[in-house]
Length: 78
Image 1 (cartoon, helix red, strand yellow):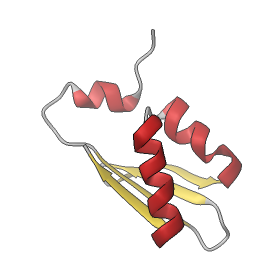
Image 2: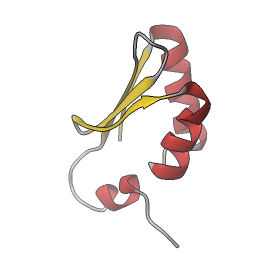
Image 3: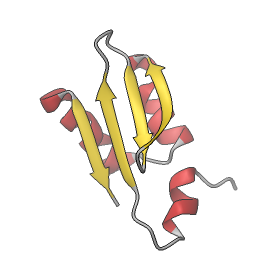
Image 4: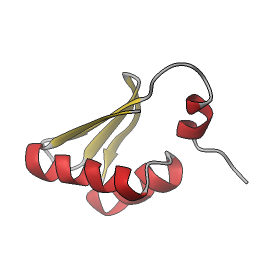
């Protein structure tokens, strides 16, 4: 079983902050704890990038997508 970045960071004592922002060209940029981890992600690959690669699935993914739809950016702190 593999561990996502989120799972390994959760074992430490620091909080996890995820920021997802829409770029002017319609792609997305993803930051974890103020470090850019992905750039120019097309919308069709955003779910895979957030869930499969980063471990933000289910309710977390739904909240991210809701914030993106409402504000054009999302911030999630765990």
